[in-house]
Length: 270
Image 1: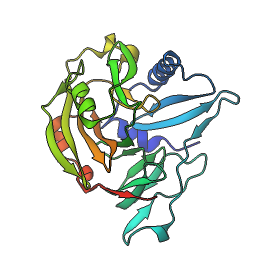
Image 2: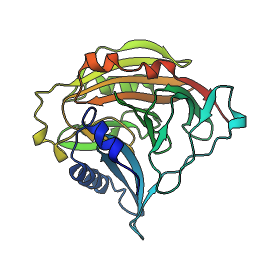
Image 3: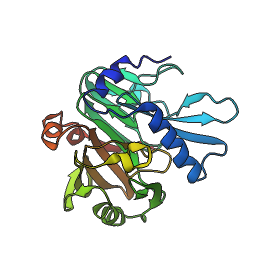
């Protein structure tokens, strides 16, 4: 079994959702979207650490998602690959440093991570003491929840950065800032800040959690209050979304955290 104690400690500062209710919510959501046949995606928010794994219908065992391995010889000086992990070693604890995280077999990003960061699902989620960073390709299936509270089915928004930005700025429940043009990691796009205030009544929501935008099989939800920094980027013609997420903290507290997203650079790998 993985050692979840550091994540439970992190939960007290970053993400305090109830584990069982969020797992149940994720499974109900996947059944609604028709992904429960074969391998279903189960969202596990374990005391502040977010893990996205697949559940095999035949054996019922949770298996970590796989990512293509990176050889240290393939990397620039000073850039580290994520350490390999066994089946019982997800998440992976990281020392401070600059790491390369694959997005797929042809695109990756390098990022500076503070000490005591934990990498989940091969770097899809990077949990620090201050926030959880989620970076992923946002293809045709990426979208927004029909209603983040009561109907959390992800609805695709269209393929462009502008399509997604328009949907995000009108998303119910969230207070979203006006779009701002931004450059990040060599890519151009749009920056948004999103909030769900502490006074929002999340008890009326599915699983007492508010759904975030995402891909249908990696979308996550959590309780109020929420503060997020979102970058919607065009990386060489491919849409990428970076989310810096914090549940239970203020914008001021999030701004005081490590400026990890600013260190991101994207690179072609194939």
